[in-house]
Image (tube, rainbow, N blue to C red; front, side, top):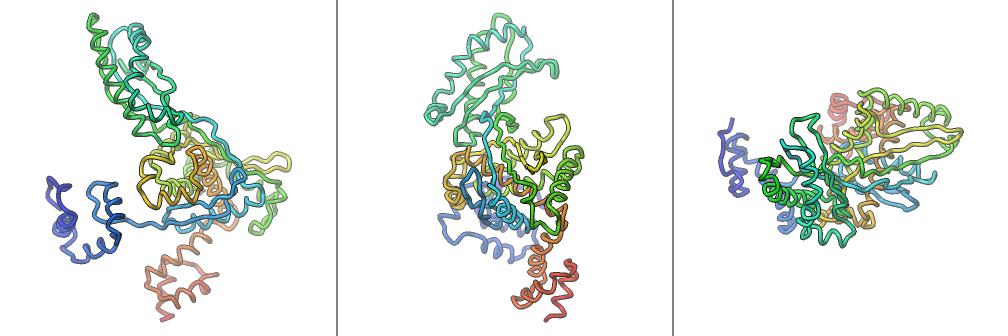
Length: 435
Ligand code: MEV
């Protein structure tokens, strides 16, 4: 076990690696070689990456993929994706191709408001507090003028502030809930800066205002909320049931019925709902990472939204009406196409170019459609061939590499395992007997 170290962040990169070697990794010379191998040979690019995080000692690579043939609101897109999960991109590309001929995905941003909160405690008369906010609202808002100036030019800014009494749930607890339009940026820094400036002003004004009654506002914290139920996008795809052909030896009507039943299970059973939603997030997280968005924020918001009926449920719907088969997905998405690392990370910039430099509303539409396509692909496999067939086909390559297969062995293995069980020992046996 290493001893506690003070000042680690001040060490140079080489010193940090030495510390790892001496204290954790058995003094292995290999460590520096591996870490060096993954550094970018271009010093400028490496400097950009180093600036993203403290204590960075190398880069951690993931595949950067693209999935073509996405028809979204009558425009054809190629989707950039970052994921390590073998079958995600292949499944997504199949789904995109499948829906392409059926009109693709139709999608719409339903609402576009983000929220920040100033949490505070107040022990005095609620009516006097309400009066204080009412009288000082303009001045509190004015304290954000320097921060909101540019955002206002881009059509954004603060749209409302509201005092919320939470004292029924927690003694003395109030919130100032602030609504924002952050235009094309995700807006976390913008929202948090506005809130902190407003908090300071509230403190200053309230200390003066409540002096005579001996009351005071105690600011606890000021932060955006990652729960964004007023920043919603919906995507759907529909077709005639008769068009559900060429899907794994199953009649279109039978497929539609089975698909709807699978979606209905995910509405009522939490264990299935979580996995169903994970399938949606496979695609969503991959495009979020490729476009430099905060996938942790989106994940947190989406799963809270999935629980908004007081029970965790699946996010997507499947319906059959007459001869129409319809899939839809409605989710909160707080994302951006400017700010953050979008102007810094070379591959994020490229991803946005591949997507034809979308506005944040356009990107919301694209992301929701990717989520729905990924969901369709997963459930389609589950109710027909099962998930393992496609998954293990892709995983075979991982196992071959792990077992140090050469090019010839890989070629032979792809044929051999077409109708065989794929697992580490069968692959390892195959390599031994095909030396
Ligand atoms: C695997 O990454 C995702 C699935 O489990 C999703 C689902 O079950 O719907 C296949």
